[in-house]
Image 1 (tube, rainbow, N blue to C red):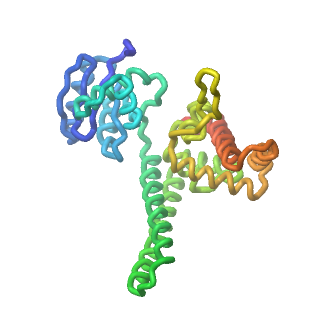
Image 2 (tube, rainbow, N blue to C red):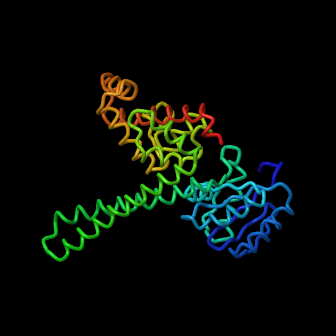
Length: 310
Protein backbone atom coordinates (compact mmCIF):
# COMPACT_ATOMS: atom_id res chain seq x y z
CA UNK A 1 0.00 0.00 0.00
CA UNK A 2 1.07 3.57 -0.63
CA UNK A 3 1.55 5.01 2.85
CA UNK A 4 1.21 8.73 2.20
CA UNK A 5 -2.51 8.54 1.49
CA UNK A 6 -5.51 6.51 2.59
CA UNK A 7 -7.11 4.41 -0.15
CA UNK A 8 -10.85 3.73 -0.27
CA UNK A 9 -12.87 1.51 -2.58
CA UNK A 10 -16.54 2.13 -3.37
CA UNK A 11 -18.90 -0.37 -4.93
CA UNK A 12 -21.13 1.92 -6.94
CA UNK A 13 -24.22 -0.24 -7.20
CA UNK A 14 -24.80 -0.35 -3.44
CA UNK A 15 -22.26 2.31 -2.49
CA UNK A 16 -20.51 0.21 0.06
CA UNK A 17 -16.93 1.17 0.68
CA UNK A 18 -14.06 -0.09 2.78
CA UNK A 19 -11.48 2.11 4.45
CA UNK A 20 -7.88 0.88 4.75
CA UNK A 21 -8.74 -0.01 8.35
CA UNK A 22 -11.31 -2.50 7.10
CA UNK A 23 -14.44 -0.61 8.13
CA UNK A 24 -17.36 -0.47 5.71
CA UNK A 25 -20.76 1.15 5.45
CA UNK A 26 -23.49 1.93 2.95
CA UNK A 27 -24.26 5.38 1.60
CA UNK A 28 -27.16 6.60 -0.52
CA UNK A 29 -26.80 8.45 -3.83
CA UNK A 30 -28.55 11.75 -3.08
CA UNK A 31 -26.43 14.93 -3.22
CA UNK A 32 -26.78 15.37 0.56
CA UNK A 33 -25.65 11.80 1.25
CA UNK A 34 -22.69 12.18 -1.12
CA UNK A 35 -21.69 15.35 0.73
CA UNK A 36 -21.88 13.48 4.03
CA UNK A 37 -19.80 10.68 2.52
CA UNK A 38 -17.14 13.16 1.40
CA UNK A 39 -16.94 14.62 4.92
CA UNK A 40 -16.55 11.17 6.39
CA UNK A 41 -13.78 10.35 3.93
CA UNK A 42 -11.94 13.57 4.75
CA UNK A 43 -11.77 12.40 8.36
CA UNK A 44 -9.26 9.81 7.13
CA UNK A 45 -6.89 12.58 6.04
CA UNK A 46 -5.54 12.68 2.47
CA UNK A 47 -7.51 10.03 0.62
CA UNK A 48 -7.73 8.43 -2.83
CA UNK A 49 -11.10 6.99 -3.79
CA UNK A 50 -11.58 4.23 -6.35
CA UNK A 51 -14.86 3.60 -8.19
CA UNK A 52 -15.53 0.98 -10.83
CA UNK A 53 -16.83 2.19 -14.19
CA UNK A 54 -20.50 1.21 -14.08
CA UNK A 55 -22.04 2.43 -17.29
CA UNK A 56 -22.41 5.99 -16.01
CA UNK A 57 -23.88 5.16 -12.61
CA UNK A 58 -20.59 6.22 -11.05
CA UNK A 59 -20.67 9.74 -12.54
CA UNK A 60 -22.76 11.48 -9.88
CA UNK A 61 -20.68 10.05 -7.06
CA UNK A 62 -17.39 10.78 -8.84
CA UNK A 63 -18.47 14.36 -9.49
CA UNK A 64 -19.56 14.90 -5.90
CA UNK A 65 -16.37 13.51 -4.39
CA UNK A 66 -14.19 15.40 -6.86
CA UNK A 67 -16.04 18.64 -6.07
CA UNK A 68 -15.30 18.00 -2.39
CA UNK A 69 -11.59 18.01 -3.20
CA UNK A 70 -11.00 14.26 -3.02
CA UNK A 71 -8.67 12.42 -5.36
CA UNK A 72 -10.94 10.14 -7.41
CA UNK A 73 -10.08 7.29 -9.77
CA UNK A 74 -12.45 5.35 -12.03
CA UNK A 75 -11.07 1.86 -12.59
CA UNK A 76 -11.91 -0.94 -15.02
CA UNK A 77 -14.05 -3.68 -13.41
CA UNK A 78 -12.31 -6.44 -15.36
CA UNK A 79 -8.92 -5.41 -14.00
CA UNK A 80 -10.18 -5.29 -10.44
CA UNK A 81 -11.69 -8.75 -10.80
CA UNK A 82 -8.47 -10.12 -12.31
CA UNK A 83 -6.56 -8.59 -9.41
CA UNK A 84 -8.95 -10.25 -6.94
CA UNK A 85 -8.47 -13.65 -8.55
CA UNK A 86 -4.71 -13.15 -8.59
CA UNK A 87 -4.64 -12.72 -4.81
CA UNK A 88 -6.98 -15.66 -4.28
CA UNK A 89 -10.19 -13.75 -3.58
CA UNK A 90 -12.85 -15.79 -5.40
CA UNK A 91 -15.88 -14.69 -3.38
CA UNK A 92 -17.79 -11.69 -4.70
CA UNK A 93 -20.06 -9.46 -2.64
CA UNK A 94 -20.56 -5.70 -2.59
CA UNK A 95 -18.31 -5.29 0.44
CA UNK A 96 -15.65 -7.59 -0.97
CA UNK A 97 -15.80 -5.71 -4.27
CA UNK A 98 -15.23 -2.42 -2.44
CA UNK A 99 -12.28 -3.89 -0.57
CA UNK A 100 -10.78 -5.25 -3.80
CA UNK A 101 -11.14 -1.86 -5.49
CA UNK A 102 -9.25 -0.30 -2.58
CA UNK A 103 -6.46 -2.89 -2.71
CA UNK A 104 -6.19 -2.63 -6.49
CA UNK A 105 -6.03 1.16 -6.36
CA UNK A 106 -3.37 1.04 -3.65
CA UNK A 107 -1.26 -1.16 -5.92
CA UNK A 108 -1.57 0.83 -9.16
CA UNK A 109 -2.55 4.38 -8.20
CA UNK A 110 0.71 5.95 -9.30
CA UNK A 111 0.13 4.62 -12.82
CA UNK A 112 -3.42 5.97 -13.12
CA UNK A 113 -4.80 9.37 -14.08
CA UNK A 114 -7.13 10.98 -11.49
CA UNK A 115 -10.69 11.72 -12.52
CA UNK A 116 -11.05 15.27 -13.82
CA UNK A 117 -14.59 15.97 -15.06
CA UNK A 118 -15.06 18.24 -18.06
CA UNK A 119 -18.72 19.09 -18.81
CA UNK A 120 -18.10 19.68 -22.52
CA UNK A 121 -16.16 16.43 -22.94
CA UNK A 122 -18.78 14.55 -20.96
CA UNK A 123 -21.52 15.86 -23.25
CA UNK A 124 -19.50 14.81 -26.30
CA UNK A 125 -18.96 11.40 -24.72
CA UNK A 126 -22.70 10.88 -24.20
CA UNK A 127 -23.55 12.06 -27.71
CA UNK A 128 -20.81 9.96 -29.31
CA UNK A 129 -21.84 6.86 -27.37
CA UNK A 130 -25.45 7.17 -28.51
CA UNK A 131 -24.29 7.81 -32.07
CA UNK A 132 -22.35 4.52 -31.98
CA UNK A 133 -25.44 2.71 -30.71
CA UNK A 134 -27.48 4.10 -33.58
CA UNK A 135 -24.83 3.08 -36.12
CA UNK A 136 -24.83 -0.46 -34.72
CA UNK A 137 -28.63 -0.58 -34.89
CA UNK A 138 -28.58 0.71 -38.46
CA UNK A 139 -26.07 -1.92 -39.50
CA UNK A 140 -28.25 -4.67 -38.03
CA UNK A 141 -31.40 -3.38 -39.71
CA UNK A 142 -29.71 -3.07 -43.11
CA UNK A 143 -28.59 -6.70 -42.81
CA UNK A 144 -32.16 -7.75 -42.01
CA UNK A 145 -33.49 -6.08 -45.14
CA UNK A 146 -31.53 -8.57 -47.25
CA UNK A 147 -33.51 -11.48 -45.79
CA UNK A 148 -37.02 -10.06 -45.26
CA UNK A 149 -39.69 -10.14 -47.97
CA UNK A 150 -42.75 -9.20 -45.91
CA UNK A 151 -43.75 -5.69 -47.12
CA UNK A 152 -45.02 -4.50 -43.73
CA UNK A 153 -41.82 -5.48 -41.94
CA UNK A 154 -39.69 -3.93 -44.68
CA UNK A 155 -41.66 -0.69 -44.45
CA UNK A 156 -41.19 -0.55 -40.68
CA UNK A 157 -37.45 -1.21 -40.98
CA UNK A 158 -37.05 1.43 -43.68
CA UNK A 159 -39.00 3.91 -41.55
CA UNK A 160 -36.73 3.17 -38.60
CA UNK A 161 -33.66 3.63 -40.81
CA UNK A 162 -34.91 7.06 -41.85
CA UNK A 163 -35.42 7.98 -38.20
CA UNK A 164 -31.93 6.78 -37.33
CA UNK A 165 -30.46 8.91 -40.13
CA UNK A 166 -32.27 11.96 -38.76
CA UNK A 167 -31.12 11.20 -35.22
CA UNK A 168 -27.50 10.84 -36.32
CA UNK A 169 -27.70 14.19 -38.10
CA UNK A 170 -29.11 15.74 -34.90
CA UNK A 171 -26.28 14.26 -32.84
CA UNK A 172 -23.65 15.50 -35.30
CA UNK A 173 -25.13 18.98 -35.06
CA UNK A 174 -25.02 18.74 -31.26
CA UNK A 175 -21.32 17.84 -31.36
CA UNK A 176 -20.67 20.81 -33.65
CA UNK A 177 -22.52 22.97 -31.12
CA UNK A 178 -20.30 21.75 -28.27
CA UNK A 179 -17.19 22.51 -30.31
CA UNK A 180 -18.49 25.95 -31.27
CA UNK A 181 -19.18 26.83 -27.63
CA UNK A 182 -15.86 25.45 -26.35
CA UNK A 183 -12.89 27.19 -28.05
CA UNK A 184 -10.37 24.90 -26.36
CA UNK A 185 -12.01 21.77 -27.74
CA UNK A 186 -12.56 23.38 -31.13
CA UNK A 187 -8.84 24.14 -31.45
CA UNK A 188 -7.85 20.64 -30.31
CA UNK A 189 -10.38 19.08 -32.68
CA UNK A 190 -9.03 21.08 -35.62
CA UNK A 191 -5.44 20.25 -34.68
CA UNK A 192 -6.12 16.50 -34.66
CA UNK A 193 -7.89 16.70 -38.00
CA UNK A 194 -4.77 18.08 -39.64
CA UNK A 195 -3.43 14.51 -39.68
CA UNK A 196 -4.37 12.68 -42.87
CA UNK A 197 -7.13 10.15 -42.27
CA UNK A 198 -8.38 11.74 -39.07
CA UNK A 199 -11.96 12.86 -39.63
CA UNK A 200 -14.49 14.45 -37.28
CA UNK A 201 -15.58 11.11 -35.81
CA UNK A 202 -12.10 10.06 -34.65
CA UNK A 203 -11.17 13.55 -33.46
CA UNK A 204 -14.39 13.74 -31.43
CA UNK A 205 -13.95 10.24 -30.01
CA UNK A 206 -10.41 10.99 -28.86
CA UNK A 207 -11.43 14.22 -27.14
CA UNK A 208 -14.47 12.62 -25.52
CA UNK A 209 -13.12 9.20 -24.58
CA UNK A 210 -9.35 9.53 -24.23
CA UNK A 211 -8.60 12.35 -21.79
CA UNK A 212 -5.14 10.83 -21.31
CA UNK A 213 -4.13 11.90 -24.85
CA UNK A 214 -0.99 14.02 -24.64
CA UNK A 215 -0.58 13.34 -20.92
CA UNK A 216 0.91 9.84 -21.20
CA UNK A 217 3.76 8.19 -23.08
CA UNK A 218 3.34 6.87 -26.62
CA UNK A 219 3.41 3.31 -25.29
CA UNK A 220 0.65 3.98 -22.76
CA UNK A 221 -1.45 5.80 -25.38
CA UNK A 222 -1.14 2.80 -27.71
CA UNK A 223 -2.12 0.46 -24.87
CA UNK A 224 -5.21 2.55 -24.09
CA UNK A 225 -6.37 2.04 -27.67
CA UNK A 226 -5.38 -1.63 -27.60
CA UNK A 227 -2.63 -1.57 -30.23
CA UNK A 228 0.41 -2.10 -28.00
CA UNK A 229 1.91 -5.58 -28.45
CA UNK A 230 2.68 -7.47 -25.26
CA UNK A 231 5.69 -9.78 -25.17
CA UNK A 232 5.07 -13.55 -24.92
CA UNK A 233 8.24 -15.35 -23.88
CA UNK A 234 8.81 -18.33 -21.62
CA UNK A 235 12.14 -20.12 -21.33
CA UNK A 236 13.47 -20.78 -24.80
CA UNK A 237 10.06 -20.16 -26.37
CA UNK A 238 9.43 -16.70 -27.74
CA UNK A 239 6.27 -15.85 -29.67
CA UNK A 240 5.23 -12.72 -31.50
CA UNK A 241 3.74 -10.04 -29.27
CA UNK A 242 -0.04 -9.85 -29.08
CA UNK A 243 -2.27 -6.81 -28.65
CA UNK A 244 -5.01 -7.04 -26.05
CA UNK A 245 -7.47 -4.86 -24.17
CA UNK A 246 -7.89 -1.18 -24.83
CA UNK A 247 -10.89 0.91 -25.88
CA UNK A 248 -12.33 -1.03 -28.78
CA UNK A 249 -14.41 1.74 -30.29
CA UNK A 250 -11.36 4.02 -30.50
CA UNK A 251 -9.38 1.22 -32.11
CA UNK A 252 -12.14 0.57 -34.65
CA UNK A 253 -12.38 4.23 -35.64
CA UNK A 254 -8.59 4.61 -35.84
CA UNK A 255 -8.47 1.47 -38.00
CA UNK A 256 -10.80 3.12 -40.53
CA UNK A 257 -8.74 6.32 -40.39
CA UNK A 258 -5.62 4.36 -41.28
CA UNK A 259 -7.36 2.65 -44.20
CA UNK A 260 -8.36 6.10 -45.46
CA UNK A 261 -4.79 7.39 -45.17
CA UNK A 262 -3.46 4.37 -47.04
CA UNK A 263 -6.07 4.78 -49.76
CA UNK A 264 -4.99 8.38 -50.47
CA UNK A 265 -1.32 7.31 -50.29
CA UNK A 266 -0.41 9.53 -47.39
CA UNK A 267 3.41 9.66 -47.29
CA UNK A 268 3.56 9.25 -43.51
CA UNK A 269 0.99 6.61 -42.59
CA UNK A 270 0.62 5.15 -46.07
CA UNK A 271 4.37 5.07 -46.54
CA UNK A 272 4.86 3.40 -43.15
CA UNK A 273 2.29 0.74 -44.02
CA UNK A 274 3.82 0.06 -47.45
CA UNK A 275 7.30 -0.35 -45.97
CA UNK A 276 5.98 -2.95 -43.55
CA UNK A 277 4.27 -4.84 -46.35
CA UNK A 278 7.43 -4.76 -48.47
CA UNK A 279 9.24 -6.38 -45.53
CA UNK A 280 6.78 -9.24 -45.70
CA UNK A 281 4.56 -8.28 -42.78
CA UNK A 282 0.98 -9.65 -42.96
CA UNK A 283 -1.83 -7.23 -43.76
CA UNK A 284 -3.38 -7.21 -40.29
CA UNK A 285 -0.05 -6.81 -38.50
CA UNK A 286 0.90 -3.92 -40.80
CA UNK A 287 -2.47 -2.22 -40.30
CA UNK A 288 -2.34 -2.48 -36.50
CA UNK A 289 1.24 -1.20 -36.49
CA UNK A 290 0.10 1.75 -38.59
CA UNK A 291 -2.77 2.42 -36.18
CA UNK A 292 -0.16 2.47 -33.40
CA UNK A 293 1.88 4.93 -35.48
CA UNK A 294 -1.20 7.14 -35.87
CA UNK A 295 -1.93 7.13 -32.13
CA UNK A 296 1.72 7.96 -31.43
CA UNK A 297 1.52 10.93 -33.80
CA UNK A 298 -1.73 12.19 -32.28
CA UNK A 299 -0.37 11.77 -28.76
CA UNK A 300 2.71 13.80 -29.69
CA UNK A 301 0.53 16.53 -31.18
CA UNK A 302 -1.58 16.67 -28.03
CA UNK A 303 1.52 16.73 -25.82
CA UNK A 304 2.95 19.74 -27.66
CA UNK A 305 -0.31 21.68 -28.01
CA UNK A 306 -1.23 23.87 -24.99
CA UNK A 307 -4.94 23.54 -25.84
CA UNK A 308 -4.90 19.90 -24.71
CA UNK A 309 -3.48 20.80 -21.31
CA UNK A 310 -6.23 23.26 -20.42
